[in-house]
Amino acid sequence: MSENTIPEVFIVESLRPNDPREGEIIYKILKMGERSPKYRYVHTPNEFRSVIHEFGESNYRYLHISSHGSPECFGFEFGPMYFNEFHGLVNRYLHEKRVFISACELVNHQDHQLASLLLRNTGCYSVIGSYDPINFDDAVMFWSNFYFLAYRDQFGERIKFSRDLVLKILHQLTGLYHLNMNYYSYSRVKGIKLTQYQDGKRNNI
Image 1 (tube, helix red, strand yellow):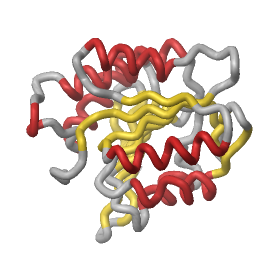
Image 2 (cartoon, rainbow, N blue to C red):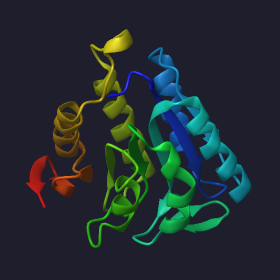
Image 3 (cartoon, rainbow, N blue to C red):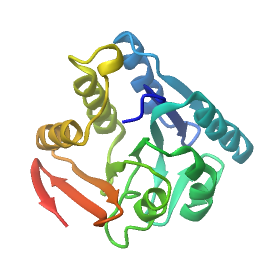
Image 4 (cartoon, rainbow, N blue to C red):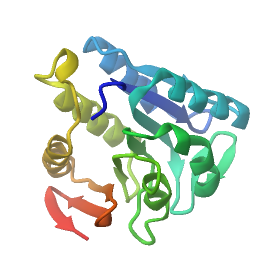
């Protein structure tokens, strides 16, 4: 993991106007744990572009997206954003980063489209998220606990969400919350690799 990136979470959220803002809750929990997350809610495409640029300038290591979704696109407050457009905005900022997506069915394994776009030729380490619909309360509990466990017992320059640590936590929490999560990673030798956790059980696909 590059020493040039900052091991903090940058949360970008865009939902329907009356939806609970799960990303804001996760942000507050991280702040309570004396982390230094950033949280931005976006209403328009221009705001989204500006915030993604801010993420790049921040050099934060972990990008967390909270939105609605489908197997084809993100469902932001301002409307759908298809994967190619999303990739065009974020790809230059993903080198040595991890992407966490809290949205229904976006990180699906039907055609691997989103993971393929975000991982190939960007230097991104992983793309992680639910491939099934997920309720707001489950998402808040899952991601809050995920980040708590990821940061626990790590301090200063030692902090990193290693592959082994992330997979260990996914194993624990998918069993606890009965959720189904996909972990996509990429290597030039093996290409895209999918590790799936279903109710605490691991499958390599």
